[in-house]
Image (cartoon, rainbow, N blue to C red; front, side, top):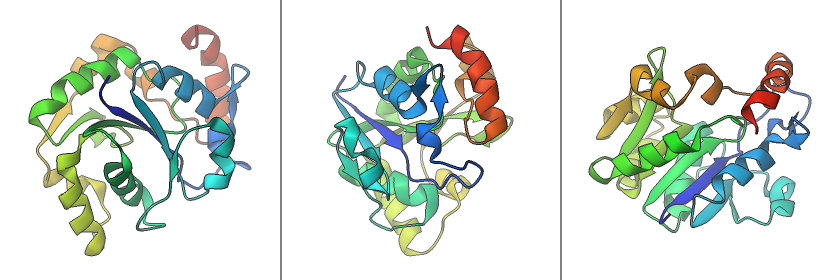
Length: 198
């Protein structure tokens, strides 16, 4: 597919004693699960991280934030700058159960929008969303003016928001968007892995 898959691995794992990208679920690191899912779908796959040395063994291009340590807004901005293709799917490094049919569906909708973003319990999911490079000026302006709230940024974009009714056509919403971001979640993910990582 003429699009870039992007793994966001810039967040600090304050609730884990190690980087959450390297948590093991079903005998495999979460980041490796994500790479294995995304690689067949995308022409290009890249990692965004401010700790590139941690990810050099995966054989993928790694880019750091241009505006470092400004959270997900800085990471998404770096993705928009560095991706080779105008269409891109961004996924957090702690989400091993994302449904690839949903990803393909979101990509099919991006042509007329700046972004296609899921919404769960009234919260947007910007780290499991599709972006068009047309977003770049908005993200750049927000970073330059220290506007770091993603909700505010999305209010300035022509975004297609997918609600839960639409999302659940592709599977269990809670499972697809499950974050392995603390020890309790990791234990739960281990129980889910046998069923969801076939």
